[in-house]
Length: 495
Ligand SMILES: Cc1ncc(COP(=O)(O)O)c(C=O)c1O
Image 1 (tube, protein in one colour):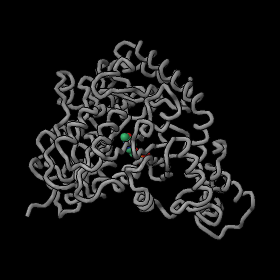
Image 2 (cartoon, protein in one colour):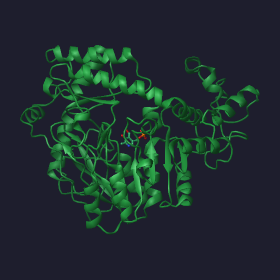
Image 3 (cartoon, helix red, strand yellow):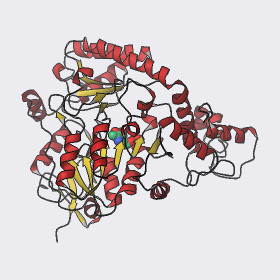
Image 4 (cartoon, helix red, strand yellow):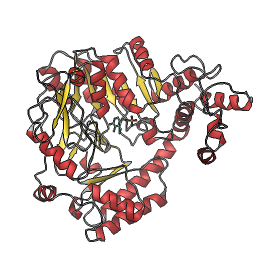
């Protein structure tokens, strides 16, 4: 196929050029009905192509014209049999993969450090999780990936498992041995689903970890918007081989799509694919070079550590995406949250996320040398400063634990009910501190990084209460709970 084409962007431009008089949604009628402030800021061009799926513009739910061609171009560029454009991120991609691969009550193996959208997939599909422990780096307080050995052990111990779901790379750019995992999974006759939200660029550069489909995955989801040039919310789901029923997959994809998708988002996927297919190698070479150079400069700052390729080969670190820079500030005496706040407030630099010990900086094809210099300058100044008094200070408990290094992730709690049943069961709100022993009815996810600590159907353990309490005191935002302050928690009502 001709990868220089952008069939979907083109039909939108043709529609505008032909001067059609609109009597259709969206109601702003190509900007004319929109409040002036936003209209002027956005500009008329973007509003002119914010159209609906009328004749000639194809239908994302039943693509047969330009969207079909754009998706086929994407499939070819990514080495997939089929690619689907998504407009609700990899969040919907994770949910779709599970709905396509497992039935209510069936078991699926997945890592404990899966994104919260995997829990959404469990709740929607009714599947039962068999959690796999990722390898953990205690000194960085980071979960890495699961190993092929862990997958093999899990499949041996749970012969009823129907699919394996893996997160690779992690938020921090650590990639799993997907080829090894695919071999193990397929030797049991099972499909491999990969949350590759953070790897939409992998396919386009040999210095990046192998992409999930090339490694043997049957389904993989990419957040195109995270690392490439498309608009927020856009993602792609790729399928390859014959272990996934394509008819069922297509039916599930339709369930998750709006009947009024934002066509600008779809056009942005079309052009992001062309950009990668034509210029991906050159653009990514520059990005990788800039990131590696910046990592070296940051590592030269006393007290600052940014892990790199020396980690490869450690448990759960099969390969590394060099475009992610994890800035470990532990030795400076800051939490990652404090460092993030100082970098933003004083140096106008905003990181992608912070956790207890680290701040994460993304380098993409849009990162400039000037931006990288600014980051280095901010971190240098941060390392020189006395502990500031105007930023949030963690509790004494957290400080003591950070100093003595006794900050541990909680063990996976016992599963007492299927997540879907617990989520939908009659529930009540009880005091969070006194909730140990009860069955959780909600997903509680410190964000970032968006990995649930307790999920529906699991028994709330004293360890979980303690851990979440600490995260709360450290100023971490909790996603998911009914009471965002986590004074109370939703549990399954006892009969
Ligand atoms: C590992 C992982 N999977 C899935 C998602 C969800 O992706 P999206 O924001 O595109 O819905 C995220 C978001 O951060 C993520 O980190």
